[in-house]
Image: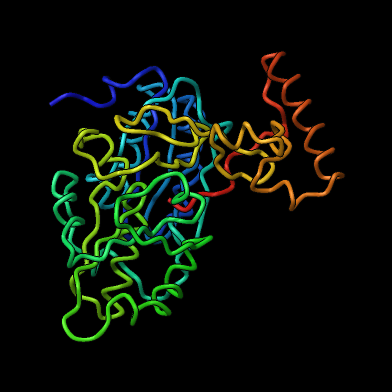
Length: 321
């Protein structure tokens, strides 16, 4: 078997998570932060009592060192990791953060270690979601679904993963009806939201629940494009913004005013100004705000020309997966 770490390019990206009992998770933060800094690794890692989640990037040897460290956590030997590469460092800094949940749903008693849906390998996913007796639900947020999703997928139009339980409870009767319940297949970027959402549906009494093992990223990595039922690109939580089949970098940029992904069409709009506004947010910002964004953008350009990182540069504020 090939080693994904040695096979990737100079900047290796690793999306990882594991649901496990980390009662001493606060004590794990500082050693992990120090190791990442020493190894030239950047990104965000979340630690909570329920486990670890995040995406990091750096030199292959550095990523390997960090993964080996995390695999030594309790019950983390089988850490779920998806590898890809980037043409340049997709993160500005490294943060190891302590959280109540590693992916925030806000529902008490949800434990994917105790009850979870049936995992479906990417090569079997097409058959499941093509079945007319299967309901396909995209558990991601509206700005993610806008750039790509699976055929037949229902878009909950949620702004946050916290909104998913309320959406399901409101739509349950319409989705499932009465009598024999249909199969429910759900998916997300890397798999972690699906673990929680299937655990949630099981708690709500839905039995025939399935989710895509490894998420969209694993599907785009393993399923040939000519056999794919994926349409569009996949939003990722780093400066690459989106990826396509084979996990190559996508065509979308990011509006640094509203943090929405922007297409080539968006960039051609008269409402688009780099670092200042786009068609999604132009009407929601004042001219005073746009003037502030212009100055910030100018300072960032000057810092880049000097080979420095501007102090105002920030990671994407969204980190649901």
